[in-house]
Image 1 (cartoon, rainbow, N blue to C red):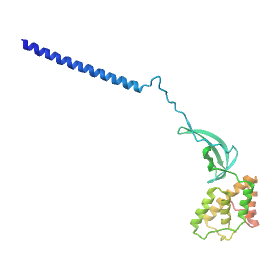
Image 2: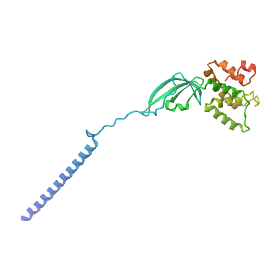
Image 3: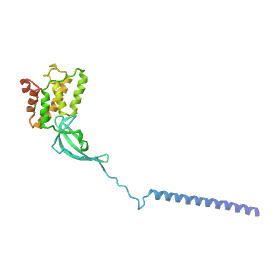
Image 4: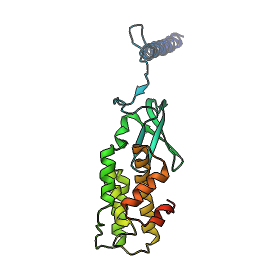
Length: 230
């Protein structure tokens, strides 16, 4: 009989130990969860971060609405409006430019207005016209190389370089009368760019502008009266 009592007491002690261990484990678990909750939830002292819409790099606006500008790749255009928009969380101010000849509407950020240039002065126009009167300077290289150089000059947007292309590709110069298709295309592109700026600066109509350029190029009277469409 006494042996059975001893075994019962031992079993009770083991059970009590297990219960105590469970209680200790539960207490530790609750403490950890409380710590995690306190760290995840912001306290009263914590400052909430407010996301602000960023703005583009500021640059003083040079041009106004209705101003004529030259965009090198497309030629002369007019600013029809100055607008704002938010793109990728950044507030952007931009010019909306209408290129009438190509029927294009461009949007140029105001902090990238270095890609635009103002119209030439009357003195610069006169100098460009005097370049047309000069002798063509044609390099003795392959046409593909020269065509690339002419294209670069046209896309530079510089009026003197454009005038040089018109002069060098004019069929009334020392070049053969019959031009290839690519030569004609480049000539017309440069001629059109130059004509557009001459008209805007001097404030004349297109026909008068053509007559002025054609005279400088030494075209015959019948060619001036019936100019080749550009």
